[in-house]
Image (cartoon, rainbow, N blue to C red; front, top):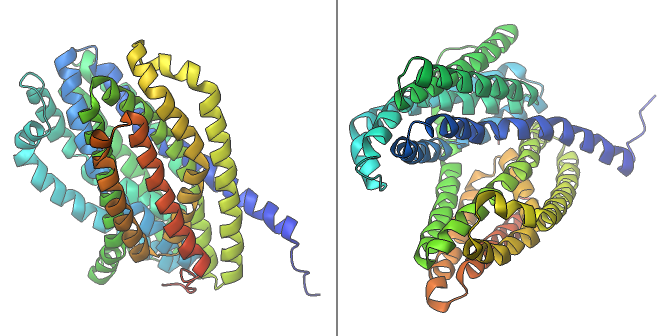
Length: 445
């Protein structure tokens, strides 16, 4: 007997279960990296102000370097999920191995650049004479862990594509605990100072990479996938990731411009901006978890030649994005009297931050739509459009933001420009989603 088609309500519940099953563990894994930095800061902070300042510069450089290559996770998720949808697990894992080999090559290249240039990079980014030696030490040692960090990104993409976000959560929690224990032991027990913190982080990252490789290699052997590097496959991964690299660089440029403008507004403004930006980033992690679920689910539907299912999943995830944005916005409004005193007791900073914080709260539903549609188009492998849309957004945002110090309005005007930026992203992504041109079915795009 032919099975009756699912009703819209039943289909919606099925999508809800899929989104929750993927998004909740993904959120836990996403916040692991900021927790790494927080643990390092808490341990190194007791060594002295110069050491903490050095860590601040070096960790910012490392975070930027690794975030540039986040396409290793995004592109791999989409490619693997397509093959999972097509029922070809062997090719899915083979595709993931190509991403891991690309991560190792990129990591080796970064080490080759960072080790000899670390002192100059640290000076370029404004480290003081007292902090620079500590920043250089931390950067040089931690750079040795960059290949492991990039392998973690690529392997995370493999598992997400396989519809598994639980394993990355377990690995992230274990990595965080190991990082905290190693740092405390090496910094104070072995009396290695800031170098001990760097070595502890490298060891934790290598342990996480080893855990991921064990899981992926085990899956490759089970399904008969080759582990050897394949030049054509690695080149295809790089080509698929190139547009997402452009997208990421454009987004980083937007955030850098915003920080530079805030610095020109005055000390109270830049202090308030850093507080608000930290909250905005935390909210982004929550919304990005839904986007990650979108990457995996959409890729699987398209790989299974189910265009209708992909459209239905997209609609449901947009609804999730709107609701999540509304909830987060209300939480920001309710918690604002408690949030600001956690970071500052300066009344000038609080007064400056409050109206900008309200702007952040109001914009969260827009952010929810943006993150979800970003994930949908990534899952569809629509990288070239995402790159073009982000470059257009940067071109509109930059002159508006740079005019803020001249036209006035202070930090509130700057965050109004940030809201404009997210609105432009929403419009470009919504137009693409509505057009249906992103729907290309099959095991490969």
